Image 1: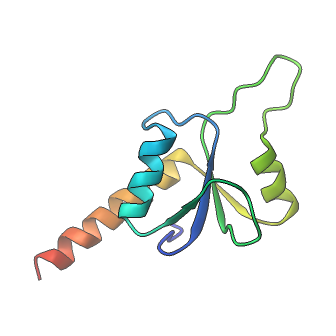
Image 2: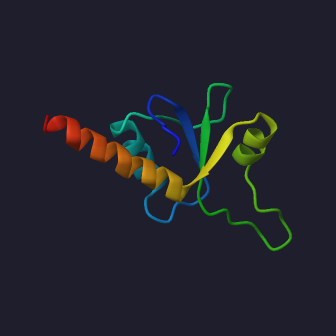
Length: 96
């Protein structure tokens, strides 16, 4: 699992479990650094469902940028697994 703690991340596509705003708030609460635009500092792109018309490639500008600049692309499930892991860490340390 990739650790997003203190890492600049960007969301793209439609998330199934949260709104983009909720995902960004959750990421901040758990220690990630969500950005609104791609830039040289972004380490991970969290890609939700990509919707395009029938003849267009399933991609976004953020994904194309990530592919061109070797930025790792994670899916929504990867993000949610990291969130659960971070919540478990925070819970553990708050009881010690």
